[in-house]
Every structure is written in structure tokens, then in C-alpha cells.
Image 1 (cartoon, rainbow, N blue to C red):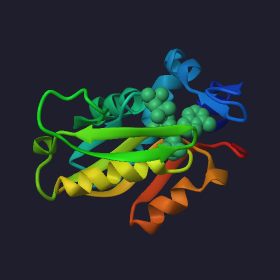
Image 2 (image 1 turned 30 degrees about the vertical axis):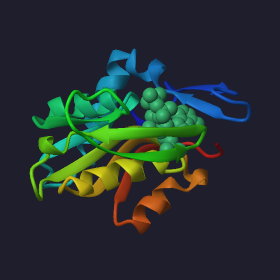
Image 3 (image 1 turned 30 degrees about the horizontal axis):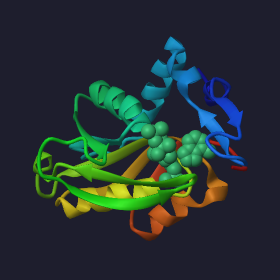
Image 4 (image 1 turned 60 degrees about the horizontal axis):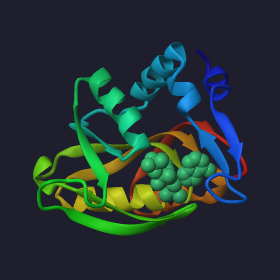
Length: 177
Ligand SMILES: O=P(O)(O)OC[C@H]1O[C@H](OP(=O)(O)OP(=O)(O)O)[C@H](O)[C@@H]1O
Ligand SMILES: Nc1ncnc2[nH]cnc12
């Protein structure tokens, strides 16, 4: 499928989860077998050499990150929302387009110096991705690339990632919020 055809499978819902937010809903893409498969195949082409593992952010980052990891024959490191991991964690609080949250990882899942690709469904303000990259680095991994299905460029997340030395790539861009 072309990128335009994949883009047409994304549903836009106004005023969710708060007034003024244009929510880009990927459930309509992942329930379309050819669309989901094509999306993962095209994401795989964006992955640089030398990546040793894929990390994905709960919850929607798990869908794309885990599928991409299987496609590439790599392991998957879950970046979890607070309080879900049964072992000691490192964590950080952060703000996103429509709220605030806390993410945590189990640092023992990462090998020192291992190159990890961060994957999420969408980057808006970049708060989530920056927090995740920071945690992966704190655990000793190298995280200098991130991959998203959607970028909302007007919210500036990719630029913030670049300032921290993380190169962000996205399959689709939606102008506006
Ligand atoms: O660039 P930002 O402004 O940080 O926003 C992007 C984040 O927002 C969404 O997650 P959300 O916290 O809504 O969680 P979910 O995946 O559990 O739905 C999305 O999946 C990204 O992780
Ligand atoms: N506009 C948006 N649509 C879907 N997920 C988001 N996460 C942050 N902003 C979002």
C-alpha cells in the first residue's frame, strides 16, 4: 500500500480526550490486515543498521514496536506506565499533549551499550518519547533513533528529540494538531 493509502486508514476524532484535541486513532489501521502489514514493512525499511532491540511505549507503542521486533527478528523491551513491572524499576514523570504520566523500565533488560530503537505510534509534543529515550540511556543503552507511525510536526516533538541527539523518523505527517 502507498503511504497515502495507509494514511487514509487513520481515523481522526475531534475533541478526544479533551476539547480542542484532534485525536489520530490508529485502531482503524491495525484492524486492516493489509494496512497493518504494509505499515510494519515500511517501518522496517526505516530501521538503521546495528539496532540490537526495539523498545516500545505502553500502550500503543507496544502494538507497533512488538510487531516490528518480530518482523526484524529482534527482542522487545516494554517501556511501561507506572506500577506495572514486578521488579525494581527506574522511572520518570513527563507531560504529553493532553496530560501527564509516568513511565518505568526494568534496567536489567538492557545490555550496556546495546543500541535500542524507540518505537511509538505517534509523536506530538515529544514529551513521551524524550522521557523514554532518557530512561533507556539511564539504563546504559544507546538510544539515538526513534521511529513513529505518525508525526504531528506542528507540535514540535521531532525537533525536541533532535536537540537531545535522537533522530526521529515517521511514516506519516498530519498537519495541525
Ligand atoms: O508526544 P507526546 O505529546 O508525548 O504524545 C505522544 C504519546 O501520546 C500517546 O500515548 P498515551 O499517553 O495517550 O497512551 P496510550 O498509548 O496508553 O493510549 C501516544 O501513544 C504517545 O505515546
Ligand atoms: N493528537 C493525538 N492523537 C493521538 N494520540 C496522541 N497522543 C498525543 N497527541 C495525540
